[in-house]
Length: 389
Image 1 (cartoon, rainbow, N blue to C red):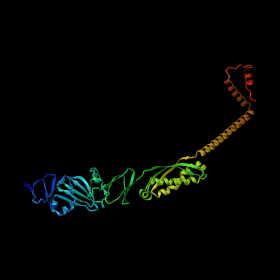
Image 2 (cartoon, helix red, strand yellow):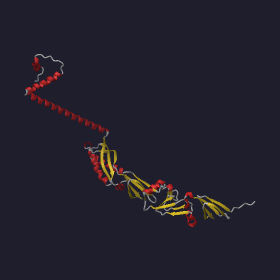
Image 3 (cartoon, rainbow, N blue to C red):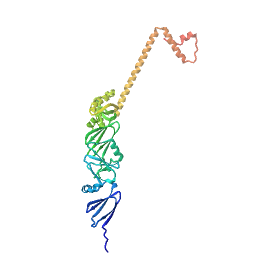
Image 4 (cartoon, rainbow, N blue to C red):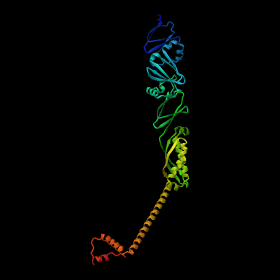
């Protein structure tokens, strides 16, 4: 029996398809939607079907095919981005993705109304608020939506930078200070650049310096806790001077506290409670100001003594208070005796005053007696019951 040879092939192309016909591995033609009858006597033809709904012509040899076959340009649009450009790809007026710099883009023309907006990332590294909002809303700021040949790329096209309220942001571009940012949302193209943000709180901040063991001039071990209030008045100067503002201020206050306590005895420190505050502030204020930081206030929260020293100090205070109480008692007794002596002198030379004193004494006695029997009349009562001599 003879095998029937089929030399005519019928290819049906759907509305969303395009078929590339290759003859001896060379592109011969592009089939559009419809039914096509093609003779292939020598079996030299191969057919590759593409779904244009996928939008991208992602053939490995796309660049060479497009260049060597002018007929392909009737169906595929091509864009080439410079190494300092990004593209916003819009299909049917909807943002579809972001095209990376230096990228070749091949798209099926019949997939929709295609528009590519080019942006120079050298002249416009900051993304304007309208474009940033559009990109974020479309979800295009992700590695999966980035249009690039190397699909393994993980970099996000845009660095979203958020500066909180009452903060100031310093944006560094490739290690150099690029711009000072106000509070709000900002976006910057990350292609070919390294983006870094340093944010500083411009409000007054409380900083607690925890207790540390310090020896006073008389070699008493103390533990002192400080509380300080600071404010960054020049963020650029602070950023260029110190890596971490709070850490630097903390250590500066610790060193100043050691110097202040080490030059005074325990008695001096306890007697002059403002000495430590004023001395520490005086030692640190100018140093911090030169770095863009204002020291608003500093104060001692606690002075903690060792257990033995605390007991001794309590005994000293107790003895001092007992001595003071004894002095006050003796002073009052002396004053009372002196007053009695003066009163006696006055009554000695004044019989009438003496008699009034007797009547006052009689009144006090009468208050304590329920009943009184008098013999000899009123004169006997007055002369016999009470008599001051």
